[in-house]
Length: 215
Ligand code: SAH
Image (tube, rainbow, N blue to C red; front, side, top):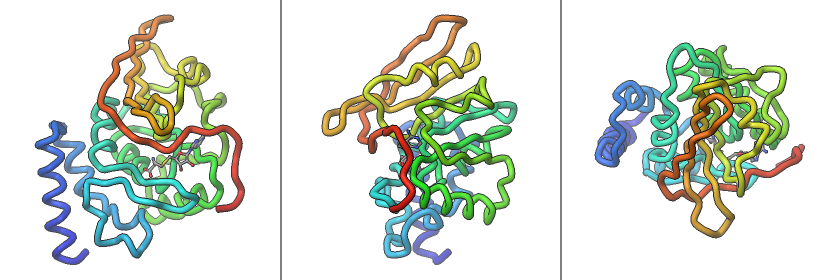
């Protein structure tokens, strides 16, 4: 990595601290991962700006603060089995895989799914299990999950995902209509009950059903 990217990365970590990311393990994990490896080459210089950036298939790699915020809200540890809906670039997946036991991640765009699989191999992260499919249905064969993170916005929380969450499990998901203000919602399961907490405003690409074979 060139010197200017290193100093931009340091500045980004400081910005995340100011914005309330206090989990030092999370901050050092973010520091250890080269975000430029997950974005198109022509955007390399913007890798450490606190901004969402375009990736293939008209999708986006989320803003670093939101990646950090959602991960912090998820309270992941090394014993957890985690489900991510929306693999996208694979950036959020790699961060989670370093913090949990096993990460299951689902993507509905085939080119993104294929590119992410290559990246996970390159990073030698063998605790990531990928699926090309519609994540709204969750992952029946692998349930229940300690943690679920959805990285695309839904109008309502998919019921199938709630049912695949373990007791005392946490789910973090952006909720809201496209073009209007969406919010991160944190759901905690307590037996048959669910506690909902509305958190920061966000702007995410939509959670859509079906699968797409080309870009
Ligand atoms: N976590 C990603 C964010 C990618 S943007 C990252 O770190 O880069 C959201 C992703 O969710 C897109 O790739 C989009 O194709 C995917 N997506 C949207 N609806 C989906 C669904 N129902 N199932 C699986 N993936 C979905």
